[in-house]
Length: 147
Ligand code: SF4
Image 1 (cartoon, rainbow, N blue to C red):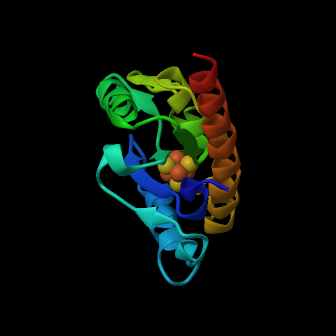
Image 2 (cartoon, protein in one colour; image 1 turned 120 degrees about the vertical axis):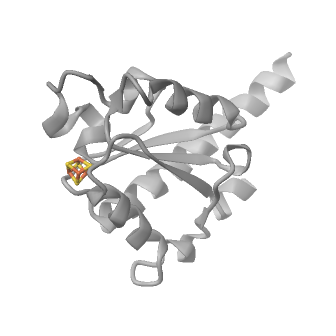
């Protein structure tokens, strides 16, 4: 098990969420649901983060911000779309400025639908993300050995 699996650091970005999903992300990290028991630490620095939690849909204004945060994260990294807006645009999918889900901007590894997404779902998504992180770390290591 890699060190990131034991203590995945997450960064949270509110795309164009109504804030419902953001409250649930915070609840996930607070003592009530206690994401920290899985070693999950919240960071504001993309360079320190392993898992990118995005709420809300991607629109004309935030698409470059989402890409910029993602590009600043080091490999291996995982993206979790938190809530149905982040998965597909949700109820805002046909708004004039909405492009769609987070996967319109960056690759998404785990989809956690729901309106709002529940902390239990987010914990499941982070655990699934950690498994993906391990897979990616192993692939990177193999690629470096082969290079
Ligand atoms: S999925 Fe629901 S709660 Fe979450 S940002 Fe969209 S509208 Fe708000």
